[in-house]
Image 1 (cartoon, helix red, strand yellow):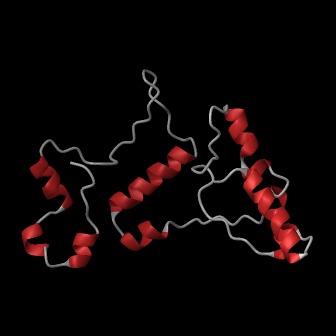
Image 2 (tube, rainbow, N blue to C red):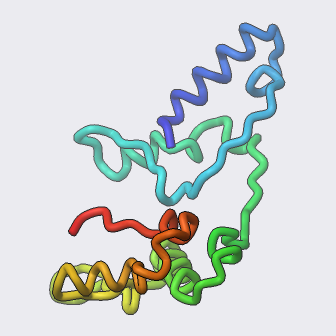
Length: 148
């Protein structure tokens, strides 16, 4: 998410250009995303600096109508149990429901991936029975190995 000053500057600019003193010059804006994942970056700033720069601390925030999306359509349409489990794990992580390890402070997400020991195992895990399915472009487009 951008710094709150960006939205405040846009508000002033739209009011000026449109000669309309309503919020954002009367323009309806749609902002989308997970606000937990999109905090503004403040170089060499503290956590307090980041929170102060967050859109929620702007005078514009109380005029924003928030709508929450509750169904993960990517998971719903995909229909894979592993995709649902991954989405559930991410939601738990975002809600702070996962506890870090006492020794190193890391959060271990169980059953989120598959560990393979060889490149051949990796190929078979990502492209099972590729010799029979290589002609199915939609199947191939759903798979990728980003880094061996």
